Length: 189
Image (cartoon, rainbow, N blue to C red; front, side, top):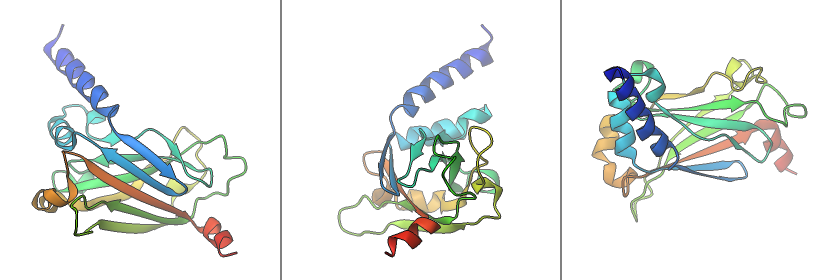
């Protein structure tokens, strides 16, 4: 067997094992992702010779309004942030609910890296508005739309400096609040 094929196969096996370890919890429009083995993910992504091994994508999840998403995490950054920042994106996916959902999706998306220390509550939060003008939030015509998110969610330098805050037992926890605009209007009742 060709050495590069064997290396790719080993890399694939390691990542497949890693990919089974994260846990997703969905409660209404709040999603929590526990990503264990964080440093191993970072090392694998940093040393990846193949594009498909540069990020982690979660299992699909559905929020209370019926929209289906998946989360993409580039532990070593993406695009201009490669090697500089943790990058986080959300991908809108085709759903069996699409016939009755309103598109384009509009709402406020908030990503939170949870403070895992016992007392500080120093969560790192960033939000953006999902607007109807962005193709990422139109009704999916294939399995999933182009991802949209935060290329520079948190600098790797800050993550390293605050590892005792954000990384506990080699696990990070990322929260996502997906606030659908029309759903929020209904909640005012």
